[in-house]
Length: 102
Image (cartoon, rainbow, N blue to C red; front, side, top):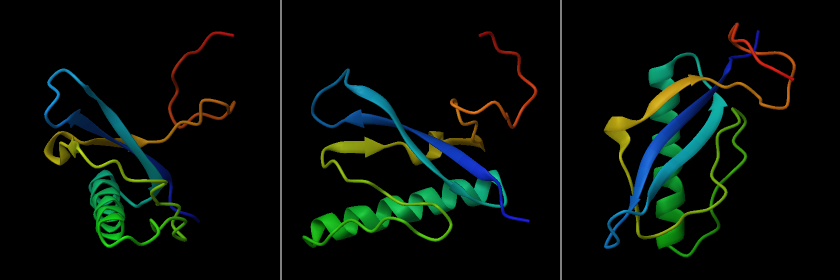
């Protein structure tokens, strides 16, 4: 049975420009929330290292994790990262039993 998909939300802020903030989202397969955060951090570190070396950003790992790009000047707050099962907003199947309206 394949591992479930997780979403990791990491608060971000723009260095040198107070007030600019947001959330960076990573998704991929993992066996737990803590593993999802660890893998997301690894993916981010690999993207940052590749960008610094002038290489292509690695993406498309077999477990679904990857980075589409890297934006210098944005700091990620990894201690504040949260992780949970990913719910595809375009799917009728949900990982939770939440109600929704059409």
